[in-house]
Image (cartoon, rainbow, N blue to C red):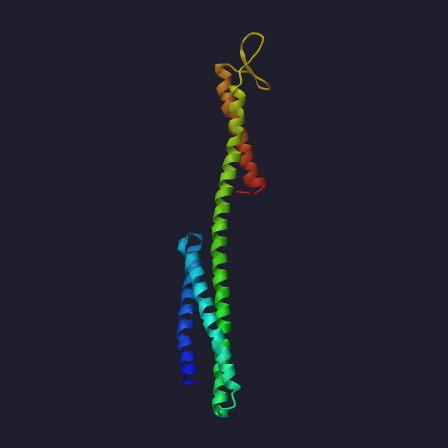
Length: 192
């Protein structure tokens, strides 16, 4: 039973080291958010694997201690001590399970921060695309070669496009449409 006692006493520094590591990960993730290194998630996964390994090693120890408690040869005061050791081992198992949950939670947090950052990038790209598409539409309309009966260039719906009128009309319409979209996004829909 003294071997079991030494093993149980040696468990506390191991669990303290895991606690300190998880606290460091939590502070690092909270501080750096999505900018934390790519290997943080791998290190958290490795920590989880190590915790599961420790958990697999502690479970049989509980069975051994229970078996020793039920032995008739062992004295009553030793049995009481072994019951205390069993309680400590069960507490360690619960703490290991909680630490595994913390690992999973921290990995989810890292993924969540990265997902939010990617959503922000996609949002900006969608806004830029929406803002530039009217200019593309106007350029495609101006690029069509429509000619009236007098062989002058025209754009359907906009009329005659000579050098004096075409260029200011293109940029005027483009700026007006993009400005309207920007104002509606910014002030009416409050998307920006």
